[in-house]
Image 1 (cartoon, rainbow, N blue to C red):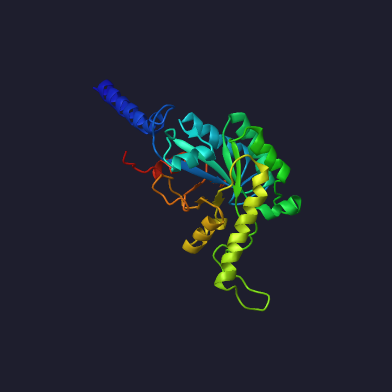
Image 2 (cartoon, rainbow, N blue to C red; image 1 turned 45 degrees about the horizontal axis):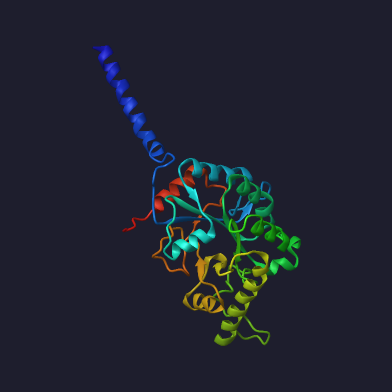
Length: 286
């Protein structure tokens, strides 16, 4: 009788253990977790010494990428993503890696990992930092470093806009704020519109010589935008814009309001990132 009870108890624990493993077993390589949508990941600073909510170590960055690949995710380029937004096919479990700001750490620390693993990425660059890239903290990439990445294997590493000079004040984001004028007043609507358009065109103009791809994509500084600013970006030549809304990107989203999932926090382990993506998966009607 005791032997029977022991056998039953053993079977119960075995079944419980299998149940706990099912979420992992169910996402092995080759398993389709989602289709016709993309998890766009957002990073900023990849550095081992600095600490901030937007900084992760090189080890954590690589661990995240390895973990996702082992579980069947497929990394795509920005150009593949934009083609998807226009109706082209995209691999199941698609992921797009993006970086904001244009820190030197992306070139020095992330780029070697991406190259070794064959993973594409998009960099959203603040172009007025090019005047003195090493005088800032953290330091920024030089134009030559950006060109090295974009031309090594064209179409793999992209350089796109994070504005020319509208990334200076998170408390009053330049993209939507009517700034003070020298006479103590505030910009008129016409002055505001001219500033947004001219800044965007300046960013496009600076980045265009640094890579083979068309510069037509932007990430909003601090994720802040409104209807007017989006319209002005389009007037200046931007066709796609990324937010920081943590959702999956589908073809049905507004091309000027593309969501991204934050992956660049030191508290986001590979397992947490994987589960975060899975929670955001949308049902897409074929």
